[in-house]
Length: 65
Image 1: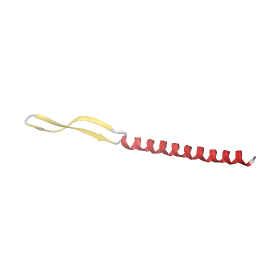
Image 2: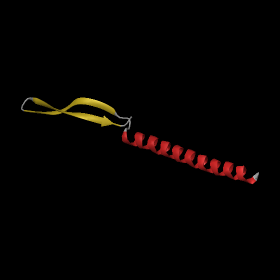
Image 3: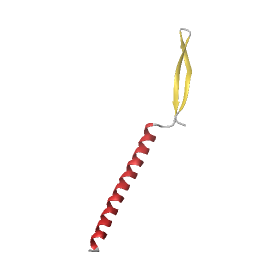
């Protein structure tokens, strides 16, 4: 009779550790994906690089920091 609670406790521990590992792995993957899809950039708007018929030609520049 004393063996049954021990087996149940061991099975519960294995299930909980597996779930914890899955949650931590999913969190790390989500964090990495967020950083990949939202990189830091430095934006400079309206840089004039020439003119055409008296109108300035402008462009926006995106640079990594």
